[in-house]
Image 1: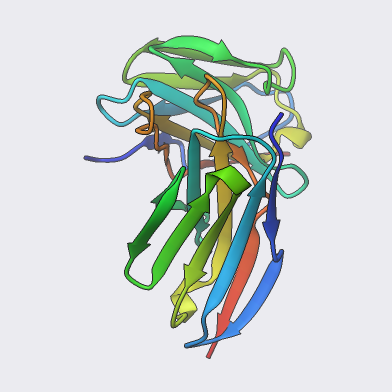
Image 2: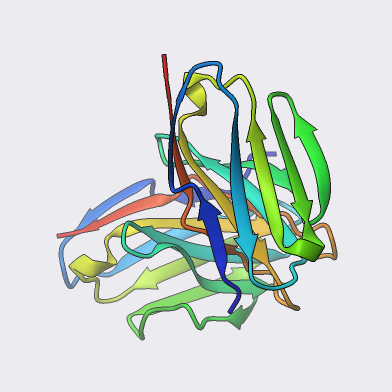
Length: 115
Length: 109
């Protein structure tokens, strides 16, 4: 299996621009997660989906952030407009949701820099 | 929400030494994972261990769920073990993970 795939790996943009991060989960997994890692806040969950349905978006910082999962093999995280404080590494993870079988696997991350 | 504490925050070892990293959590869990974040930023799965003991080569882990802690053992450390070790737990009906602040490990020659 190819693992979780994220694109782009690096993104540099200017304040005010729209940013779209993409994720392809592991085939057969039915849960997908978006996390953000910063020096100040560590690794924190932004939003997660079960069977393509958003379940908990309480970690999304504000309305500038939105996430979609149109099908089982693709998800996007969009920031519009972007701000310098959004600079971070964004990770996507996936798992199979079942008792005692819900190990999460992470993608390589997207390093976002907003100038 | 659930609280996750890791200790020590930093650790420097000589190559060949052994170490124990600890993870304490504040509530019952149905998921506990240990990760190694390498110097390139990748999160590598080490163990999925909501309870019990597992071993993988020089690494082993034990979770005592009733006492709300987990331990990661590294034996005969190597320079490639350097990086940050994270404990992450999941609880309740959801499937999300809450991460600890990590242990920064440096293994020197």
